[in-house]
Amino acid sequence: MTRVAAIDCGTNSIRLLVADADPSTGELTDLDRRMTIVRLGQGVDRTGRLAPEALERTFAACREYAEVVKTHGAERLRFVATSASRDAENRDDFVRGVLDILGVEPEVITGDQEAEFSFTGATKELTGRTDLDRPYLVVDIGGGSTEFVVGDDHVRAARSVDVGCVRMTERHLVRDGAVTDPPTEAQVAAMRADIEAALDLAGRTVPLREARTLVGLAGSVTTVSAIAQELPEYDSAAIHHSRVSVGRVREITDWLLRSTHAERAAVPSMHPGRVDVIAAGALVLLTIMERTGAEEVVVSEHDILDGIAWSCASEAR
Image (cartoon, rainbow, N blue to C red; front, top):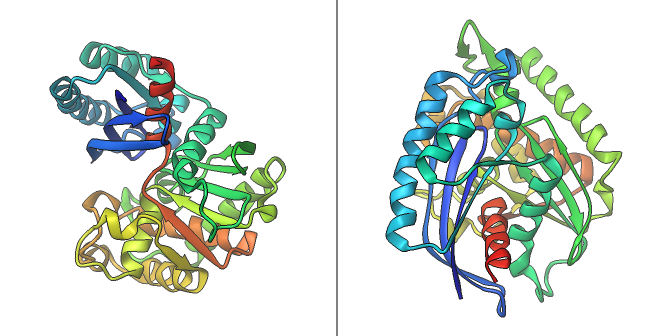
């Protein structure tokens, strides 16, 4: 067993996993798994820079995570940064801040690397399942980008495209500095057209329709599952490996796009940091399901964070 720590810093959230990894069984035993909404990608699509207040929110979370890693005595820590920090002109400020706090330099990975980690994290524990046909299409809907990966035991094709719940919200649903509540038909149509164009781009590399099982990752997908199950609170155990039909995803997406901030905030399983971006994330998921012909999505709580942890365990051996 190897005790590892993995941090995934995305456009909307930063997450930590401290776990014991057993390569012989393919099992990760969680010791601590937590998530903080920091909106690191606030305004990046418009300004090209990380906002000072977004950096400070992220550094505050890093200080908290540093204490957790120290308490558990992890042998190895890996910090992976994704879309927002890839795009920003001032990403050196981000790198220096993380290094000072955690003692490791954040790896600003490519979209293809992001896809590899997501696939490993989502599918490693599916090995041997007879009720899920392969190949898998793993879709990781983040804040700034979405990763598409097709594979069986290993990745066959992968592509990252710049559509995510935060980027789509800021690009299409914000007027005069506030999210339109609810959005107009024209706003929704423009957002859907953007998502469709991104799917055209992804489809040039990834055979989207060849997959037999769609596996959905990250907060937009897990929140849709929580809503579909009408959970009284967010429950990872109930969400992990749940299945949501395309019809149910369509119903939920339609409601989210018609709802107000107050109505979305009243959903008991909704994280406060997702209230304004969940409608865009759900529309990304629905558009993917319609494009691929998927009748359902298998929802996974295990994703890029678990893939990063496995990479730590492999390097530590």
